[in-house]
Length: 304
Image (tube, rainbow, N blue to C red; front, side, top):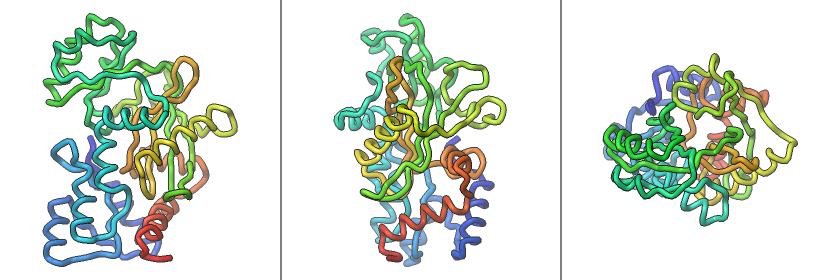
């Protein structure tokens, strides 16, 4: 689910070539390690590697690049590590005063008996991406169902389970580009389900978005102002770089709450959320990559 397919990689390479860059496809992190150790270097590594193993797998390529003093795009190892663990990420944004649903972490199925949160609840693996482990069974309406549901996720993913209060409101995602004080929300996307439900934005909903979902940019209403404030607050709390996507969902009062942040945003030109919101704003896919490279190149001193 998390690994980019040939289509995405080919589209990125073609767009970068069209922008005038010389592109070399390196492969996964292990291949990058071999080549860096042999002394190879590039002006910039465009990092889209999600990693294969471990809770800090998204931090592996950034750490490798830093070890060999190789400039790269997107966030550093610490940011990539803490954002993949949803509970750690929620604690951090909560400490920054940003809204997020109340939650607990379950490490054993028996611990679910003591969960003291009002139903409905929502459960997911604590350190997965791309909506892995999220489906129609993730919403828990009856507390008696929670232990068995947690046990199933614990067995399937061999990692703790995040249990949080279900948020019934609007589903939003914010795209952010830039660095430091210049970071800006470039689009706030609302995800609506064609059946009118408040279903989770699962992997199958994303994969079959043309029949399951509709998207629209929201701007100018009070919700948009507040959502952008929360998204930028999360961006700065994690010290993100170059580009990222922040997922939000509103509570019963309409307050946009932090769900998670993606410091390595998906870049499929058609189905990834950041390219979707960029396209709805009237911009081209190559221009999105140009903006990301420009932010990284200025940050690293590749060009002034």
